[in-house]
Image (cartoon, rainbow, N blue to C red; front, side, top):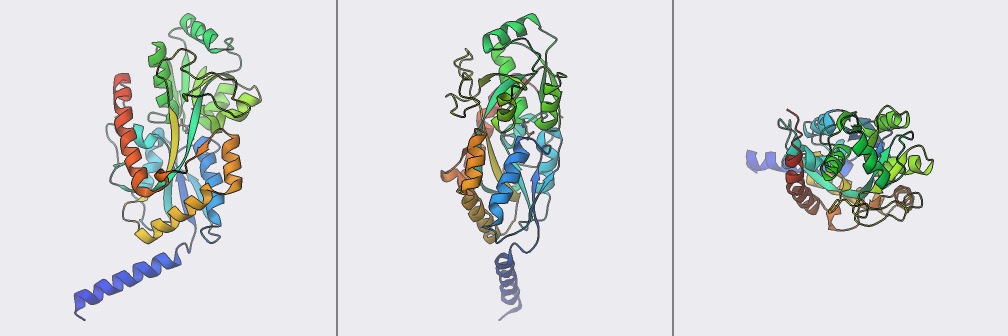
Length: 324
Ligand code: ASP
């Protein structure tokens, strides 16, 4: 065997051996938003459901937050491509490339796509002391308070920011954006009355709506939801906002160059987790819909994200809210 072939054989053998032993240490799922928020919640429930199919591996969640998820996403883009540091992020993977002028990483080429997880509707909610109790009253309250309204979100590029831009554009009004590192702390301030409005995933709002800690006005999907706490809410379209529709999706990503066999193991564990009865029940109770179609495969996950980047570009450029 010449030296080159021998070296190739050793390389091949060690990557096969590596994949066979994967996972042999703790896997970290980076969540680029605050602990206790909707993205974190999906990650913690998913980590629990993926543990068994990964042979009882320890999976921890690391909240690396800020800048609308770009800090945590960049951490994973630059991590060792060994399957031990992976990213769970949402629609920000499609809004960030449209909104951040100096992206520190490339969504299309710095990641391996591991498959999609779920789709989550959003709800438009307000502080409990806001006098408007339905969408019609909200529109007239907004009209009476022009220039004074603030809207919480998880930073430029986040789901709540995107939805908030759509609300402002549909109602032709400008609100002051108050960025947080996630909607968990924003929710605390909304309940406390420090901010007026917020658009957020049902995975964070269902329990608060049910407990009447916030006012809820509408859901962002084209159809009403069946979850008990949300079924009486109109869709934005029923409430009069023509064409308004946004659904948040979540997916898993690994640094570019992660070995194919390791990725296959993670994808297999993800698919098993999506069929885990406990995970399914938790998701359903919070209004989330588990993805069961071809988008749980890496190739179609990547195609879907590319289509979302194209879809949201014009909405974001119309709003002209960028970060340098
Ligand atoms: N709900 C946040 C967002 O708007 C994310 C989070 O806090 O988990 O993107």
